Image 1: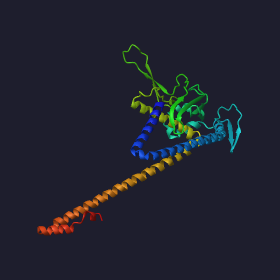
Image 2: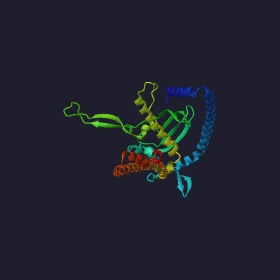
Image 3: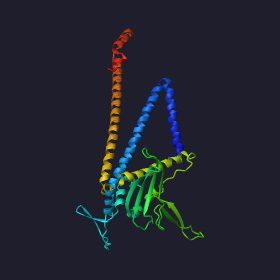
Image 4: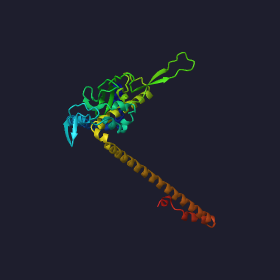
Length: 347
């Protein structure tokens, strides 16, 4: 979100305040000022809360690091686990014996619904070389970054791929922009593009097949995030909305990796975390079903009331049609006695 948009929002808030003052008339101006002062005190306390929360998160991030380091060593086979004891393993020439936990991060990410949609079958070969994922806060500008550590592989030369998120307000959060590492692909190994070969038409002078390069879906597009133009005031409304959706989806992927995959990678690998997510979805679905059932019951009650009214009117019509004819005066009298006042019909 650009500074021009933020200025517009601030101006809008001021205009809303002016309208409130006018509507409430000048007699209510003192009350409004008191409310504004209270709101200012609330903002000060909230800012202190965010500050203390950030310090608490930083404290526990340091406490988590030794655990993450041990997890890295076990997953990548640099330590050997025997009956709960962890000990270092000396390098040997037993190449046929695979150590550690193969495809640990690939499996963990594929078990997450958000990330599974981003990983194509072609990506799996490269993601098997993923050794570790780490995240850290950045202060200037505010935000966070994700580091993906890869073993030597036949797909690209980078040993680390980084994704950085710059936030205007980290606590809201409002995303300013995202930056990804440019991947150095080995020739013919790019996973974000595919080469299409088309046979030349019959009788064409050029007998060579026509090659065309097209972008394709891949998890590694994550490192080439959507970019906000510097001059965003002239952007078409539809284009701006599409760009907003792309940025939200990109941030959703990054925050999922940071908040779910990294701290709970083992649970995602084993599948335990999937069950937890499913239970959460089931609770939401049950709440929605309860609301729908209440609505259905209300509609049924309304239908029953309408049917009762129709039956009552129908029975009255039958009584009137079957009654013997009398003089006009008598009919008027019977009518007055037989009909109840409107308020009595409701009883």
